[in-house]
Image (cartoon, rainbow, N blue to C red; front, side, top):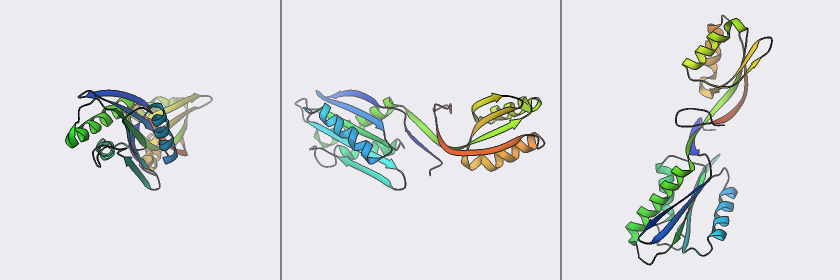
Length: 216
C-alpha cells in the first residue's frame, strides 16, 4: 500500500470553448477499472450526440491500470494528452472524460493536444485535489492531569485527532502516518512517564486538504 497519494475528492464537470467547439470535461474518483468504464459508458449515453467522447483513466493498486481512447480524433491528439495531464498533476485513481461538440473549425493536431490537455486540467481542478495518507488509528488513554500536555504535543506536531472521549480517564483517538507510529508511541510514553496507555488500531487512508485538514 502506498503511504500517500493524490486524487480527486468528488465528481465534477466543466466546460471550455475553443474556436466554436465545445469541450466538456467530466471527472470522477474511481478505485477499479469497472467503475471507470461504468462512468465512461454513462457519459457516452448522456452525450450520445457528441462528436467525440475521449477518455483516460489511471488507477494504482496491486498493479497500475492506465487506459485512454481518442474516440475518433487523430491518433495521439486526445486520449494521450488527457492521460499525460493526469500524470503531470500527480493524481491517480480517477477517470477523465472529455466530450467534444465540433464547432466547424479544425484545430489541427497541436490545437487538439493543447485543448484536450487544458480541458482535463480544468476538470481535475474542479473535482478538487486531495491527499490520501495511510495512517494507523492510535488510542491514547490518560488521566486528566496529563491531558493538556498530550493535547499540546499533538497540536504542535499537527497530528490529526479523530475524537476525544471523556470518561473516568480521557481517551484520544489520533491518526498517525504509518511510518511514524513506532516513534509516536515512544514519544507519548516518554512525555507521560509511561502513565499513558498507547494502543495501535487499524490502518486506513485519511483524506486531507491542501492545508492538512482531515476531510474524511
